[in-house]
Length: 138
Image (cartoon, rainbow, N blue to C red; front, side, top):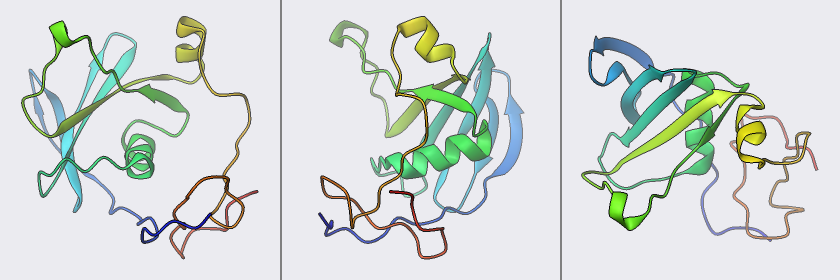
């Protein structure tokens, strides 16, 4: 099923900025900005769109995680109990762990192996990949 959305975009490379004692090291790209901080064995990545909208694009967050933390790190988002809710801005957080850590601790994760399906063979609407990226595996 083809999606009505335009193809995904390739993000500009983030540039590292200053380190703040509370928030961590800042970074920014043309599309997003935020901070990375270490907290024990995990890294916390905060992401805000430069236009400060609530844009939340999985592929783009995956690309940012790969560029800023590393491609072999896994990340989770947390949707808290209402009693713990914090919603001060259009900022998103990824808690990042070395590969295998999340699945081991939570007993969850995706099955082993890589699988990328483009819009031609997907079972639900799927955006096309950027023309400059290799054709997805099917």
